[in-house]
Structure formats: structure tokens, C-alpha cells
Length: 116
Image (tube, rainbow, N blue to C red; front, side):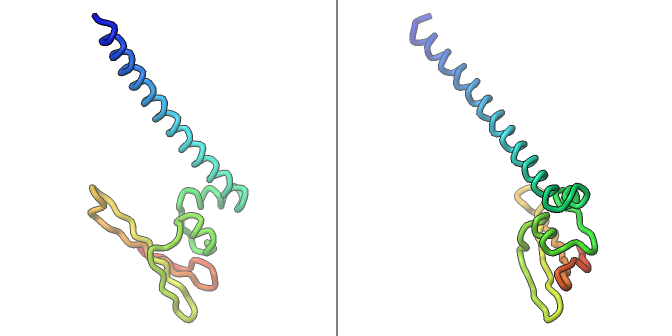
């Protein structure tokens, strides 16, 4: 084998190893980010509520702030005189083919009802 062929093979092997290492580092960074977010929510709300918020659990009596920390900002919002209704759209399947909508009613800053 010529020197150029050996050099080419070495470059290919190093590229493959480098790509695998980069992917592993990115995955570890993602895991750290998730754990950091969970820790922030536990610090903010206490362990029981913080874990519920982190796991996107819904309950009557949940505050509007907890809802937004858990589900993010709504896709749509309708304000009434005494209540707000948040709408969250979730897409499932290949290319987001099936859509599900969750309607959450907030009264006086507290989740009072929801429908999926």
C-alpha cells in the first residue's frame, strides 16, 4: 500500500471516531441540560410539585405559572371576562400527521379544568 492510501484510511478512521465522540458529547450535554431543568423546578416548587411540573403532569389547582413552566407557552390563548383558555397542540406520527389539542381553563390564575 502506498503512503497516500494509508494516510487516507487513517483520516477516515479518525473522522469516524471524531463523529462518534461529538455525538456522545452532545448527548451528555442534553442529559445535563435536562437534569439542570429538573433541579431548577424542584428548587422553585419543592420536590413533589417540581417533579410533577417537570413530567408535564396536569392537576386541578395547578398555578398558571406552573402550567407554563411545564407545558411552555400555549399555541393559542382565548381570554374571557373571568377565565382564560390555553390551547396546546401536540403532533404525533410521521411528519406530525395526527394532531391532538389540549384545552386548559385557567380561573383566577389556577387550572380549573382541561380536555384532551
